[in-house]
Amino acid sequence: RRFPSSAFDLSVIAQSRALAGKIQSELESFAGTELESIEYVRQYSGPPLAEGTKSVSYRLTLAAPDRTLSSEDVASARQRIIDGMRASGYDLRV
Image (cartoon, rainbow, N blue to C red; front, side, top):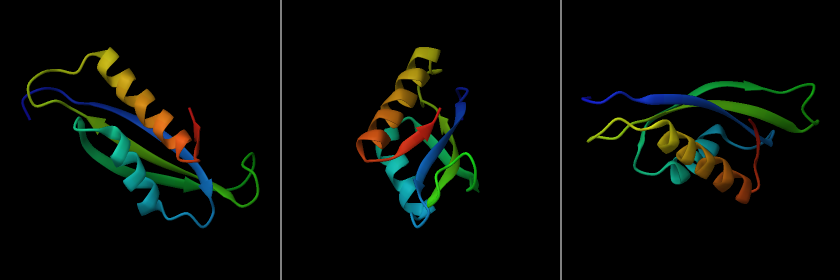
């Protein structure tokens, strides 16, 4: 890789039965072409989360092949992912 990447974590609140792989696929679908990698970090259930829900955390790494992404690029991509996940019925801990 020629240009630096930028990473951030997102925690998705989902039903306990939701598959982590399905959640990851949803994240990937909203991340766009700048997504370099997505990594499962951890899963949590318990207070303060509602019963029957869990928080699944991922680390997303964004990069562009031809330039360094600006902080605005990264913020825009992060917001696009959050908005897409919320539109798909997920809540996020941000």
